[in-house]
Length: 535
Picture 1 (cartoon, rainbow, N blue to C red):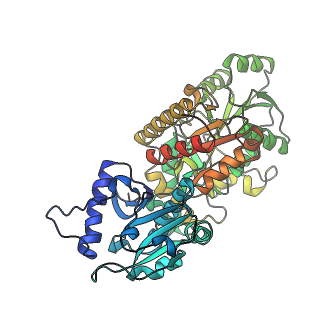
Picture 2 (spheres, rainbow, N blue to C red):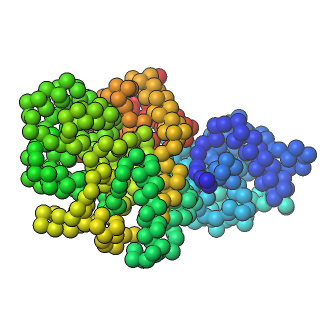
Picture 3 (cartoon, rainbow, N blue to C red):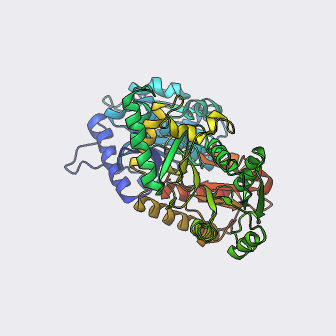
């Protein structure tokens, strides 16, 4: 699977490739150095360089280095360097900018300079110098670089000294470089630590780009059936219907089916999304009780049994599996056991759990899911899994929310996007493997340990924690909006703007896009520095 991304070079294999790319750039293409049989060129300032690289299929195809130690390269090429520059600026130099010929284009350049721009702001550099290759002057000027002084270098390798002014660094370059490189990356250039939208694989992008197919065609019905089989195989469900919409729509469909039972039920709530189930049930004027516990706490099975003993007419239970607001996993197997003993219908919101943790929907009456989040496709499709024979309810339900009507129409009562379907199918081919879920769980354990070492507290115990969501309860002196905006500006997208997070001063790290360990390590460094925490 092809995967292209930007990062700081931290691994030995990356530095080895940098040395080879340096040779290709400044021996073979720009003859500044003599050839050698190893075809390796270690930069003389290597130990002082910070490298930003573009990696594709574990191969570095572009690089850019930053260095803040004097003397700079231009100190040795221009006398009285400061006389050409704006006064009283903190200086750094950009060096070793090179992109493989087959990959050259403004998208990679944008990505490299965008990452280095965030680094410069973080380090307090106000002015960046570069020796611009004459063949790339148009690109440099587009990015905001200003030429100064005479052309320097040997006849075979000529360069134009250039600088990036403070205004350009914080304004023009920012606008030019923060555009999503969707032709290159599988999501926005910043490190995506959101619970949605999530980064998609190249195969998923290709599915989205397939030529549209009519939802009435035989080919579409075959593709829909194949996708449904993949969903049922992933979850152990008997049947599933696919809707155009969000997870809220899927839960409305579940509510509609529960309303047809004409029987009292029980909704469990220990977070924002449990509260939303309560709200949706009220809109259907359903008869139910609510068992609520503090956000971040798990349900006590004894308390649940006691409540059911007090409410013997209860016929169904509706709960959230992964409570996205807190990162808590509610015990679906215990709930299945209790419901089986009492012959109750169990319904589960599995929107944030499918694809991130093993989910067994056998024995579940109804369950909701979505195409994004843990499955790794694009937002826009919602699922309702079911194990009973759903029949249309034209006198009781809106047609768009009637699960039985979808079943009667073989899943296609209305227009369904073939592009979203093809993307979903591609994502499901690579979704939910035991190895992938194991890797996600391993990263979550590591992340929680690092946060605990830094002195942060987070919701829930390790044994009840989701592998996909870590909700951090920030200390009072750290404002969640200020921290979140600062992380946005430095290229790390976290969830913090939702009203329930702001009200509680919580911020969330989601691992659904499977971020690299190096990116997470850098994030923790920035959080520690921005929050003013001592090591």
